[in-house]
Length: 371
Image (cartoon, rainbow, N blue to C red; front, top):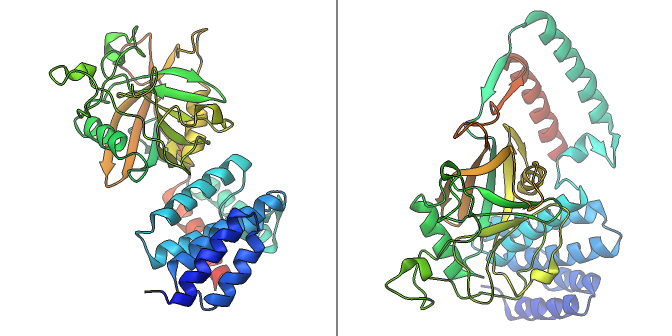
């Protein structure tokens, strides 16, 4: 348990943050907890570094330091929800700014290759030439899904909304449901469990969907009338990657939801739509990328004048729930070909031996840099 000196120091540091004085907050933290033994010290320091990064014109180094501080806070206390939320938010902000959280700086710094980067490029090119000459065959890596989005849910901010979402997902209610409204640079919306099933044509998608749990809204005897009361909590606002509840007015949330696109900051939706999660990672046709980037890929499918997808229809295959993490698997289905994936969901990669050699070299380089 932290000493009175450290606890008082935290309170004063947080006051400095509220007054927009992040440097004073950092100086105070160094004074009261010089050894940085407490999780909360690292978390407040992470918040201060984010503020300094913004003040310094979105300084890449400071943003990366903030990520490191939040990670150290979570290493010390994995149950620190404030640190987890801070880490997710800063990663989301960095994704929006095109700043990698770390690792790549070993090889590139602000677009220019470092010494290690130059060496890696030369060796990598040599290995590729060897692969093309010695190993003509290639290994095809097939993914069952065209896209995957991993989402961290916010039960601390929206317990009712998260509970209903989990209940629908675990019951398979979202399986086969389309994203029926897609607006590039804004959001992608889906989850109509009543009218949004791909196999039935989804012509009325967007008009239905209800809560999985009765919260006193609607007629208890009629599940299709159940809705979720709005849940608004300070600090949980719309930003790229955010998962929020669609509605038709106050306290009318049901099963429909939307994910905010990469270039979107729809603050006009704050305190009107419940925010209950954020996309943290994902895959697009077998390629790992941030969850925000996957949302951005989906947002670029062809749509008609009503923002409804035309040929490639993003369709949820299933949502897996583990604790407070939801993994959403999606296929792009061809509306003219029935229930058939529009793509092979396959990418081609070099032969496994070459991949193993390159991976071993890169891992050794990263370890050497860290040491």
